[in-house]
View 1 (cartoon, rainbow, N blue to C red):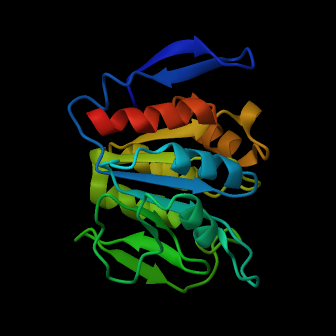
View 2: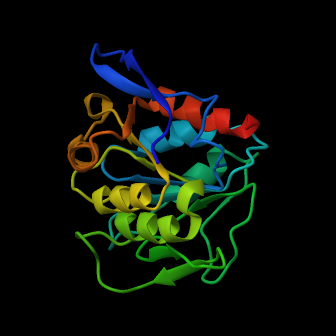
View 3: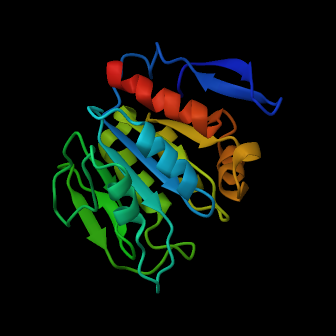
Length: 216
């Protein structure tokens, strides 16, 4: 099931599909937000996290591609810039809690189990990526079904496309960053080619939409 939408025009003069914040997937409530990004997504992710209210009631899981052989400081940077929020990398078998913003650990695929716990997997990279956005989106879709919101941001490959398809197939909803606003548009364009009716927003509107969920 898609987000209830209406047509608007983007800041760049192209048609967009903007979700109505007053109507969310019928009567279904979002119980988990999964966000995937790669090249060009870091500044967008920092904006989205910073804009979240301190008491945000929906757990968030972020999967971002990072270089496998170089120690990443992404989680530390995000946590230090948002000391009023609970931000951490999940441990294997840890249950998902709220309020919390989780960041998938570097070099591990991050899956969601039926009991809504994390499973960290060190198997081969998928589409040259570990963590894989597809792996997380697909596992979350099978557990949360129509209570899942997935968001795909800037990136240089097609990771996330199969995941978005699985989210929609299981009744969840998806937002893709407007490719015209993405530093690397290949990832959102790939998802749009596979699921043309998915909601398309620039990152300011993505942020506003996420924040609107706190009052639902």
